[in-house]
Amino acid sequence: MYIAIIKIFRTQNSGNLLRYCGQQKKVGWTSAINVNPKTAQKEFLTTRKLHNKTKNTQAFHLIQSFHTSEKISPKEANSIGYKLAKSIPGNYEIVIYTHTDRGHIHNHICINSVDFMTGKKLHQTNFKKGGGKKPGDVNLIDIKKESDRLCREKGLSTILDRTSRKRITTAELKLGEKSWKMDLRAAIDQARLNSKNLSEMKAKLRVEGIEMNVRGKNLTFNHPAIKKNIRGKSLGADYTKTAIESSLQSKPEPTAFKKLKEIRLQMIKETDLGKKAELEKQFTIQKQVLEESRQENLNRLTKEPEIERER
Image (cartoon, rainbow, N blue to C red; front, top):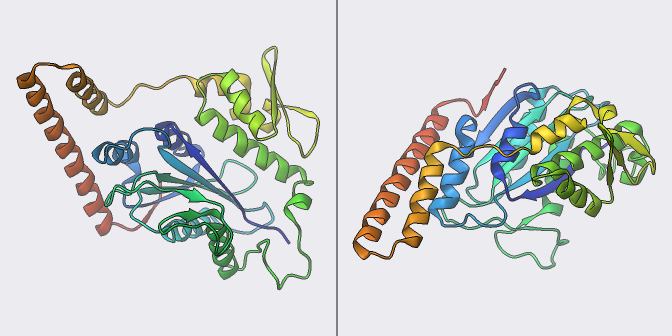
């Protein structure tokens, strides 16, 4: 009996997160809540700018992985991820990507950090039932329990499945090669989303107990479950030194948002009250245009199926 694994991370670069998770070669199914997946990068940013909350955490990254032994289609996996995302309180913009490029199917649930209606920033906690949780907080323990419930509905096993004749703990699961490799890939993927270079990535992986080293043209990783080095290419083509360095390269901002940022910088620096007022007017108009575009996308989503095939 195996389990569906849940991991949650936060990122200060939602654009990189969405670009990585939305790669067509990896995605088998896509769905979304309160946002059009094709314009999610712009809409996530628009919401944060509209509520003046662009600093620190930009998005949350929830990974829901199913074991290779589970017979589940990309559409079914995405449906479970979609229902799990729906259980998160508030009006957050969320895209659910189901990846099929590995030996196991897994969901990448990308959540904008700001509620587009209220402007409230999402806070993730790990408090046990009855302790420390504030209204509106998203509790990782609650998310795991809901994931377990949804999996049981589909006949999939969970770590809390009391009806199974044999239960495998997380520690036991990590003894299997596919499981620790799955965990290692997830950690590497998250580290590179928030890193500008290999040194930053190495430091972030070390916090997770994973050592990364450069060996000539190769990268090696040491996972605590195996206590030995494994080359990145053994994890797949996306984990070679060349592929990872390429993914760390900075990407240009969308033109519309770059212009919006430039206007804002001019507003801050401008000392002439007349010119400052004109810049504020331009900034307000630009925000309104972006908000109307976002609303049009939301209206279109209400008329289209919630789950759409990307390929």
